[in-house]
Amino acid sequence: MKTLLIAYHSQSGASAQMARAAWRGAATERGLEVVVRRAWDAGVEDLKRACGLLLVAAENSGALSGGMKDFLDRAFYPAIAHELVLPYALLLSAGNDGRGASAQAQRIMSGIPFPLATEPVILRGEVSDDHLRASEELGAAFAAGLVMGVF
Ligand SMILES: Cc1cc2nc3c(=O)[nH]c(=O)nc-3n(C[C@H](O)[C@H](O)[C@H](O)COP(=O)(O)O)c2cc1C
Image (cartoon, rainbow, N blue to C red):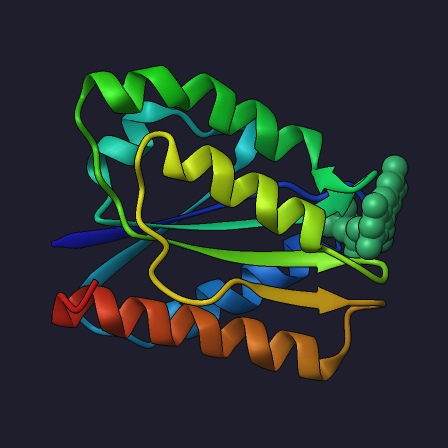
């Protein structure tokens, strides 16, 4: 069965809530296993088992949050060595911007190279019902695309 890996990093809980909502959306898709990992715990072995990757993290100081950056730094060369090419999606929490984190994540991923499957979703401000709905929709849409093999 295909597997979607959702890797998240969250300091104050915003991205964690969004990751949970994305998981709820993705889990509605039959024929796909959804694995959720904290970025600190995720590694290339998780990527090897996956057919798609959803990264959920915050923007910190104009950049991708440190925990997510750590995961991508650890996985970068092993993913290249295993010639992994996974479509990925980005779900970002930010106070009022998020563009720096989005650009940095895309720069890193393009070096592996993993293709961006869908437009990055940046959710600004405190987590709201709208944010959770958007996260759920992204999870569902990405999962559906993976099952259909469109990415
Ligand atoms: C150290 C720190 C730096 C931050 N820097 C930014 C920033 O550069 N741009 C921005 O839009 N938000 C910034 N924020 C706000 C966070 O992105 C926002 O609170 C987010 O929802 C936190 O998500 P988390 O709880 O999953 O870590 C920063 C927050 C912290 C704690």
